[in-house]
Length: 233
Image 1 (cartoon, rainbow, N blue to C red):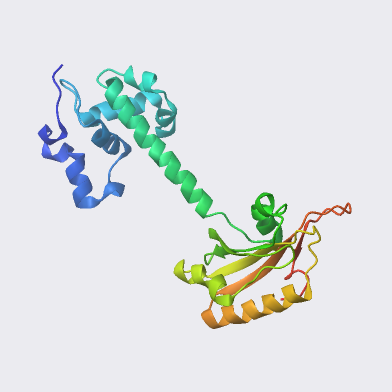
Image 2 (image 1 turned 90 degrees about the vertical axis):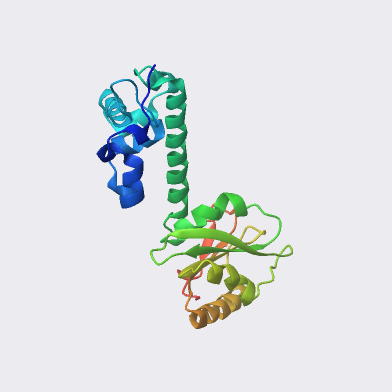
């Protein structure tokens, strides 16, 4: 079967050159697909073949959801091109999933506790973590700070803010667990929190809350305490 490379198309039909000159955002869906296909077939350019794919599967989403076998059945595509398309769509899906995870919004004590609950509530030692947030309360990442004894964790401001500075975080939420199961803040918890709030003000990184996670055995629903809600910040 005679094939036609993109470089053999008329200049106005060369999507790779257009991408170089104008950027990927300037190309149509068909032109982007044509770059992945690389070749068309006799009498049909790669762009035209891409357009036929979009007509058959109606939307880009349906094309991405189609199997290799379904895509390969389109005349001029075949198994190799179908596999190339599926690989590209899978990379796009993974990127989208990764982006959503990084942009998780944490705007309440319940959301912060929910994010760390399964990981931290049954630990047998105190661990201190920080949730780093951007200016819109989007989660950048969770960073461990220290692991302590049965009833205490050692927290140094320089360790708490090290990752926040590196990540250019706008704010953070402090999180630690009480292995006893009772999330009631201790006097030391309150003192440490106020110390970190003051340090954050100097660094222009807001400490929004301090969540203490426990595991209630007394029948009460809430298994965490928010020092902000308790007015202890």
